[in-house]
Length: 111
Length: 116
Image 1 (cartoon, rainbow over the protein chains, first blue to last red):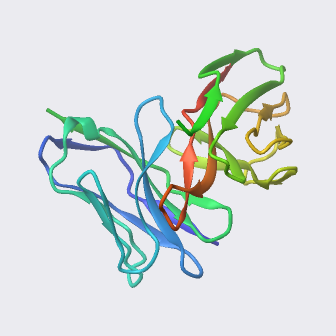
Image 2: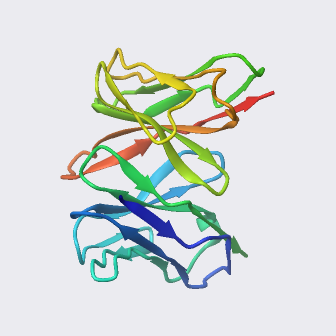
Image 3: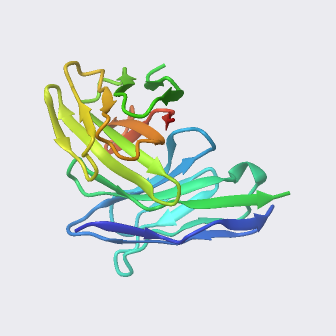
């Protein structure tokens, strides 16, 4: 079946450091891939998405490229800020009504 | 503004009591979902509904029940049969953002349920 695996946290970085959060997936067909962000005590917000191979999703300085050959969708940001501290979820949508989420990666950015 | 509302934000119940969590959306979306979130386990699907008067069990439906009598409402009942109900519950709907050609999920702010 479909699955999503993302790196375990927590990830602790200094402000302005480079961020990578790894995400790999297993799926049949051609899924859409998403990154969601969750701030403390809140629901999830869509951060970025990619709907086909080689697509690059980007938003708020975050980027992720849909790599079919490596079945990956790693999240990157060149310079993190304290306000980026949150939990990040990688997710997969396979065209059915069900979505598969990773376990989440907590990011803490220190000033 | 369009969106999803969940109420209450915090809910406390005694063990053995049923409790119903509210979820309302004014996005005109057909599909709605309930997820449970526990530390270190990500989101697990409880129930989902593709359309009014229809719903399907997700991965962890035991001890929960839902109804979908109206398009905008998808309440979740946590019954006394749920062995470990203390968790953060998230409701979501599925649809297209204005001007977009793809479907995505929109989440409510969540309800934290604590069973004492």
